[in-house]
Image (tube, rainbow, N blue to C red; front, top):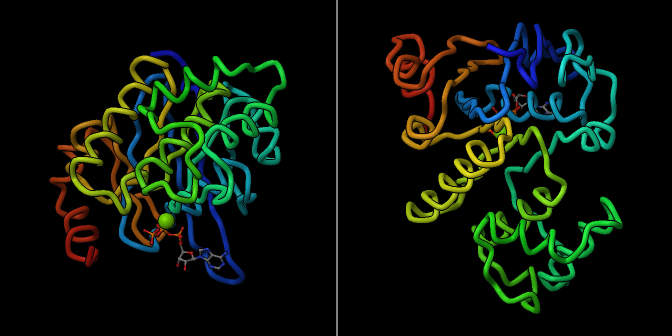
Length: 240
Ligand SMILES: Nc1ncnc2c1ncn2[C@@H]1O[C@H](COP(=O)(O)OP(=O)(O)OP(=O)(O)O)[C@@H](O)[C@H]1O
Ligand SMILES: [Mg+2]
């Protein structure tokens, strides 16, 4: 198989004197969905902060397309095509949807036109009128709007931190479809933090399981979720 598009090697992270990640390695190819799971506090979001460039790891490397980007700040990684979404879909409450899309494309590249925004909105199924105020959108449309803003930039790697949080089952299916489109049609390497294992089982090619900052399993979802160590750490520890 070709070299992975995005990878990290032996990442460790400390908050003060507390080690919250240790020995974490992963690799994702273009067009692949890699699930990252683990109980609350396992270090999933911290790992995403390191992969996106908001935090520098204590040790270890982050590699994009074979280049060591560990020391590169978040905005330069974004330019390379590494995008991320956050657990809470925070939108500019007072702006209209059209204004948010316009601001996103102009901030990124003035040459992007309204057609790019239309294309991105359609790929994520954002159909609300552009004069609707973003602050009035429900959780799913907020996530769609934020994804459309990212998609205009044609990301090559997308880190999604709990994109199904706060959604009802029918809406989770929509997210499932969007992830599928991003990976299979747009060839994005998608890294997905998700608590709902059934969602991952249906869309992830592989999953990485973290427990207390350490990787405890990696492989196809069905095999990994059956491992006794994973069942003990995840199913029995997670109250969700
Ligand atoms: N900025 C910070 N300063 C100090 N400790 C932090 C900070 N951010 C996270 N932590 C701690 O690091 C550990 C990992 O947190 P993290 O948010 O990465 O976990 P998570 O797997 O994303 O959890 P959840 O499923 O609840 O989102 C937790 O013990 C958390 O309390
Ligand atoms: Mg988290």
